[in-house]
Every structure is written in structure tokens, then in C-alpha cells.
Amino acid sequence: MKKKAKKVKGREVKEKVDLYFNGNFIGITDKPEEFIRGIRKKRRHNIIPDELNISYHPEFNEIRINIDSGRARRPLVIVESGKSKLTNDHIRKLESGKITWNYLLKHGVIEYLDAEEEENSYIAIDPKNLTREHTHLELNPILILGISASLTPFAEYNRGDRVNYGSKMVGQAIGAPVDNFLIRTDTKFNILTYSQAPIVETKTDRILKQHPYGQNIVIAIMCWDGFNLNDAVVINKSSLDRGMFRSFYFRTYETMKKRYWGGQEDIISVPEPGIKGYRGDEAYKDIPDDGIINPETVVDSDSVLIGKTSPLRFLTGGDFTTDIENKRESSITVRYGERGVIDKVLITETANGEQLFKIRIRDERIPELGDKFATRHGQKGVTALLVPHEDMPFTKEGIVPDIIFNPHGIPSRMTVSQLLEMLVAKFGALNGERIDGSSFSGIKEDMVRKGMTKLGFRDDGKETLYDGRTGKAYEVMIFTGLAYYMKLDHMVADKIHARSKGPVTLLTRQPTEGRSKRGGLRLGEMEQQCLVGHGAALTLKERFSSDETNIPICKSCGLIAIYDKTKNKTSCPICRDSKVLWVNTSYAFKLTLDELKSSCVYPRLNVVEI
Image (cartoon, rainbow, N blue to C red):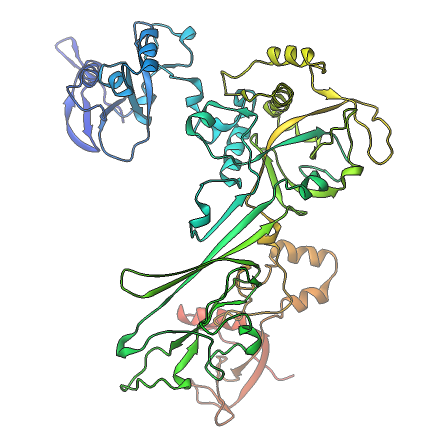
């Protein structure tokens, strides 16, 4: 609660403000504005560290000083009396190398603010908008955005949520994140085979020298027999055959030849028949005598990569024999649902002197129905149809689009910048140059329109297209251009999953969860209600009897009885009564009874023989 000012002998005493340093109370002041001005002046004159930030919170009556690590801070130009401290002279000296960034920081031209101090600042976007009230000026308006968001061209024409979606898509895009991927052994990564630099680039692209993360694609915005409904896209099949959006998926498997107490160790070789967990002769057909699969071998789900035999754990009584009965098969196999070709085999040692084996699998991924694609503007969609080149629409010059995008995706999302990017990229391709599309400072629309007219094209990007199946021209002109499209990590090959029967969890007897564990597909409340609504009672009964079991119930006390398999006899542990009835029910119901008993609730079942 805010403290009220006191009155002493007719005059008002200024309110005391608490001072906090890195969250710790250190004192009070009755001149908060003067105190903050003094701290900032000392910081700008290098009397105190420039990592220090100070902020005033009048609603809490607090001044907070922070110099601890972990704060996000960003540079801003200092403004005094409505004038920027960064002059053209500074910029010329920076370009010539006479001064450095640190010079500007040490001489009070720029300073770093954290999120709290930024709340106390009035920051101008552009030098033209400076007033005497402003405290700081942006170095460049694009710095308002984060790194991923600043990769979106013409972001100022988009809704804010679309810029967020677009930056998220960039993070999920498959590209060329590193140059040395052929010698890396990451657990999992994707590489786009023919990644390209964007025709419409931003300043962030140039500064970061970003590795490309997509391809420049010819787009026609039109409907195509309803196949590109909603967000789906229709793709030219011949473009895929020529290499568009082709990628490679790498997965690395590893194991160690461990040493155990008692002189035992793992054995890397083809496992012997008869040991515990032996998979059969067919499973080891691709493994040579040394137990390690050869490069360029085609493998599939559950294929053995490294034959490995381990001693059984917890051997007691000093029995360290190496007989078959004291070994178990522990080979490394390909994950369920994955396939590929053995790309590289690495054998090395750990710091402890144990042998380390790494095997990398390579899988070529050609786009298929259901694979996900997106632009930098958050316009994402899956592949709905692959159309042969000869059936796709074409222009009078014979240009055939690679992707047909649904026009209904534009009005509701209001991604005007995507339309602008298509027009600018078309101009850049025809003119043979990459164009700056940075937010707030990119090329202007008027310049592009004039350039398109000079090149002999319509200034709005529309063209007459002809139906590839009939040869007839479409009645309306179609907006065509180029856009930087990204192939996302969400591919059908990694997600497709179905099962009829399979493993169940030992505790609950319910199907396991997850594709890698060959798990079941969850039938939730909404799915159950759908089946009820459709009258599919037998389907529902079959699904909900997947954990069907028989449990013995004592007729006297109503608790679960005990069944002794050795004597083939049932008895109640509570009342010692042998009057036991077997009840056919769900195993989940039995677990519920156990849960109630653990909560000191007596779940008595009244059972009758029918």
C-alpha cells in the first residue's frame, strides 16, 4: 500500500521511498527522481559499472537497483533535450574503424537497459519523431523484434500474432544449421538438401550470415478443385522429383562396452543362441562376426545395429561364471517406426577407458502427403495433393507454380506482408538481385511496382494462367510470385502410427503410451461420446474391455480374496472364509479398489452368484 505524505507544522514532508539492491533492502530516500538521475549520470560517466540498471516503481514506493546476472538487456541511444547523442560523425568513424562499439558505450552515447528500466524510459522509434520528452532512441526499429521475428520481411504490415507464428515456424524449419554436419553425431537432426538464401532478405540475415533454412518457391494463389481447402497446399510433383524440399534425417545410436565388478564385461559380437532374450537367427543376418553392422546397410524397425551380450545383474554368492544362463542379450536396435541406411560407424573410447560405439543412420525424406510447410509469415499448412507437372496451371511464358496456395488463407490472417514478399521476390528474380525486405526500412511498394512495369509485367503481380488439364485460360487473373517456403520438422514419417494389439503396462494392464513404445491411441471422453451418439455399442464395449480380468471376491466381507496357484485354492485373508466368487470386471476397477483401501476406505462389494 502506498504511504501517505505527512504534514509537520503546516508543511508537507516528502514521502520516503525504499531502496533495494539485487532484491535486498539497503535504505530509503525522500528524493527519488534526483537519486535516479545521479545514478544514471555516474553510470554514463563510468564511475559505476555500466551493467547496473535502476528503475522507479511509484506504485510500490520502491527504487530497484539490479546488477545481477540473467537479465535481458538491450542497447539504446541516449537522448538529451530532444537530441540524439549518436551523431553522423560517430557513424562515419564507426564505418572507418576509428572508433568501436565500446567507445560509444564508455562515452555515454549508448547504454544497455534491462526490462525494468525500460519501463521508466520513453523510447523513440525514429529520429524524426524525437521530442524533448524522449529519453532514448532505437538504434534501428527492427531491434524491437527478436532474432527469429526480425527474419520476417515487411513484418510491420502483419498482425502481431502472425509475426509470432512466423518466428516460431523459423525455429521449426529444416535447413542447414551447421556446415560440419557430416562429422557430427547429434542424437537427431535434419538437413535440407538444396537450401537457398532468400531473395527477399532482412538485415538480420546479412548480419548473422544465417545458414539458409528454406527455398524460394513459385506460388500461385488460387483454389484447385478443393484440395487446398483451409490451410492445405497443392504441390507440383515434378518439382519434388527435381529435388524441391528433399531432406535427410539423421539419427545416432550409441552404446558402451561396460566393465562390471568381479571382472565381468559386455561382449560385442553376434549373441549366442540360447541366451536370455535371443532374437533368432534372422535378426542377426546383417551383423558380421565382430558384432557391428557395416556402413551402407539398409535397416528397418528393430534391426540389430550392434550385437551385445551383458552379464545378468545382481549375481550373488560370488558366482562369476560366464555360462549361457548367466548372460542376457542387450543388442542396440533401430527405434520402432524408423528406417534408413547406415551412414557412419564410429568406434572410440570414453574418459574411463571403456569402448564407445556410435552408429549414425541416414534416411532420405521426400515430401509426401501430410508433410508440413510454412512461410515466414505464419502461413502454415500440410501437403494435400501432389499434382503432375503437366496438369498444373501455367503462364504464357511457361512458368509453372511449385505450390498452389488457397486465397482464403489471406483475408482472415491479414498477412499483407506475404503478398508484398511475393511481389518483391518476383521483381528480384526478374531483375537478378536479392532485395532488402527488413521491417520498417525495406524496399517500398511504389519502387517495386515501377520496376515491374519497366520489365514488361503488370505492377500488381497478376498474370493470366492456363489450366494444364484443358489448356483453357482461367476467367480471372491469378496473383503469382515467389515466397520463401520452409519445410518443417513435422513429417508424416515421424508421426504416423496405428496398432491393433501390442504391449501393455505391467501395473495397470493398459496399452503403453507413445509411438516409440508401440502404444495405443487414446480413446477419450469425447471419442466415447461420439461412439455413443452413433450407436456403436459393440465397438465401445470391445474397446473398454481391453483390460478385462477375473478377480476373486469374498462373499462375506466383500474384499478381494487371494488365489493360490500352487494349491489351486482361493481364500479371504480377512475373514478366513472360503466362500469366494469370481467376478469378471475391468482391471482398472480392481486398481480403484486398491486405491480406496490405501486411503483407509472400506470398498465392500456385495456379490451374488448368477
